[in-house]
Amino acid sequence: MDIFVAIQKLDTAGQVVPFIFLNLFDNGPVALGWLRASHRELDPEQSTEYQPVLRHRRELKLAEGEIVPLEIEIWPAGTRFEAAESLRVVIQGSDIYTNPKGSVQDLHQNTVNHGSHVIHAGGQYDSHLLIPVKRG
Image: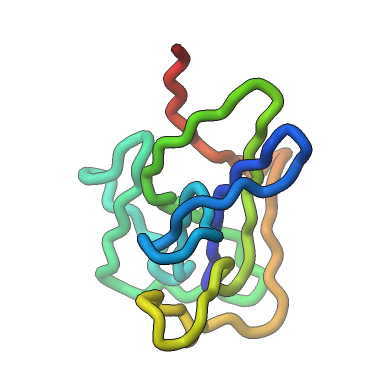
């Protein structure tokens, strides 16, 4: 399973606020992350509370119906949020932002996704977005 995550900023009216993306496009997110679930093994010595580091030493394929935690690194970004603005987390099985072929963006066209995927969140399944916040 390949999983892609985008963090979007929403204005006070609930509309997406676009950001510069790849220094070329003006329709991007606050931040992005992605992970192939078979490469989910963490390196506990290099990982920190705010940044998971993956080993990428072996492939841990999912069995049908298997539920595993995924620690997905979201690229660091700095964004100011005013009162009544919010953020949205978008999760899907393919690139969330795409631009014309031949551009600087290298799309993830060779995903390993097949069939349906279920994201388990809440209750016994710890699901969270860890955001360092500076108030000031």
